[in-house]
Length: 345
Image (cartoon, rainbow, N blue to C red):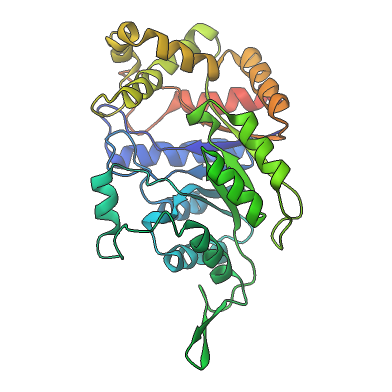
């Protein structure tokens, strides 16, 4: 079973963006050394606890800091961007790091409505963007191809290329948390990933919907997918449970409308009132995550892969940090990746 990594580049209390980025560079190097297959960063905007705002910039940083691991987006939220801009960015990344770049694209805004408006202001506004998503996906694929795309203009064809002389294109994935994305990926013959780490429900149905309706394309001749999962792994299950608390409290707050803040330390999370007032929600989330010592975590991960019929799992290492943890490091996240890789192997 292949293991991969999803990184939201969390920003915790007392940590700057620069320090969070340094921690993620170290995490990517740890993932590569441990044999992980790919390393993806997300796109979220205007969130105090998330530094992963611009996937192309982050991918360039992380690919430059590593040598072999695939690096990509999980994902670029296409409604926020003109397809040609994304095509240019990822064509350049693929040229700089051949056969190492993944372009995962999604339909969600990755932000609140006001921030979403600010992202699109001056770029055509937001009206009709979501409705045009299937067309934008198709255009993006054509723009990145070495042949480019020809636009019919009056009595002639205007050639459009994302980069002058491409020899390969990034691997394109469609991401989602609903049946819409599953159907579109199947219709366009694209690899597909369901956000199991976030949604937690409906994974089996969405993957089956995708597999049942898949139509072969020039990019892919058979369905291709993998699973995403939140994980906190430590030498003991008790320690792994403690390290998972900051993310559990934060996710409970996100789902109940609590004002966003930098991620809490383990000590602060242990005294947070949400552990009492949102105990049921937190317990429901905890049951869907991979939390435990290496042996327990590996069994849970393998069971998930077997349940959903995948041979790759993308791990979001959610282990938090203590108050005395160096601000430019995330040792518990690195530990999660190392212990999990060793146990699964």
